[in-house]
Length: 440
Image (tube, rainbow, N blue to C red):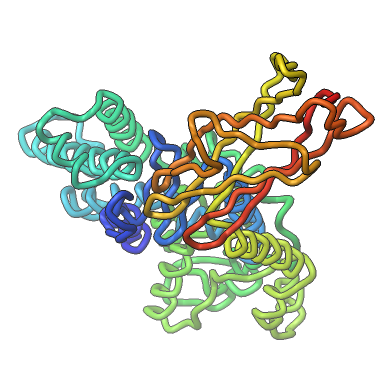
């Protein structure tokens, strides 16, 4: 909980120097300028396939962990679980342990003590929800500047609205709904069965060792389970794991800790409730030792998920390292497709968007590859160069002219290639397009 909450709350405040004209926030979703900054990586709108690839990796990773360890994501890293644990921790600090909270809950009379404890707890929950919504909006704007604007009342209304919505949802989901979200609202419990098999390690109860359960010092004829209900009392989902694996179980392993503690107190071996696989149950019932944990984790299904996950990751890294710091897109103007000039030449018009991903202004040179008689002209420029500001996509209009009697092709269209060159670094990029009409 400390690690996941630390990542969420601290990340927007990490600084990263990108130069004088770029934001210095390490992780920033700059929707206004259509940029995504992640430390040294800058993703532009046309590179959204990086985000899609990361989402695919997240899905495959979820399949992998579920296949190997059940709903381990739900038990340890899901935001609903993390914030619910935080709210329960605050509730324990303010109202006491579980028995004290139950007594307070069953108390019919609303006296001064109950009102004070409830008000204190709800205030703490509200502040946590407010911090949660505040941290979320910091990912979309410069965190120090936005924090100052929020305090002084100068922030955009969308920021306040977003914070209010997230504050309310966090307060309700973490404080009151809790496990009901996991049981009724989350679709993952229904999907997880397709990801699991008899070798998946899940939280299970060794029935052959614990039954018949019973209390008392005379253990003759009884199993190791003393029927203390410690596993049920600590379960955030309110289930009894001794009844077998259930849809509600989020694999948080709190029942394992509680049972191991009770087994130590009564002088019994730990592991009555433990991570185990269905195939281990059959082996242990027959007196054989369970399989090695590595045999459960490394099996064809998990190896397949790992291979797919790695392939997508390597593909994204490869695409990241080979991408150029300059780029262009070419869009022919279709209305009209071409113009016949008074001297008989044919002119096509193109909207060329030049992307300069450097932190300083760059001079780009445009050139044409195709019929040598064709000429490239830049609107508003006497030469074939364009100054593109730092970290921007500059739109310019380009004309390609085929002189009279040049006859670039027998057909009505001619393939051409527009090149752009960064005169400072020598980097080049190109886009293929077509020239419409004949020059004769």
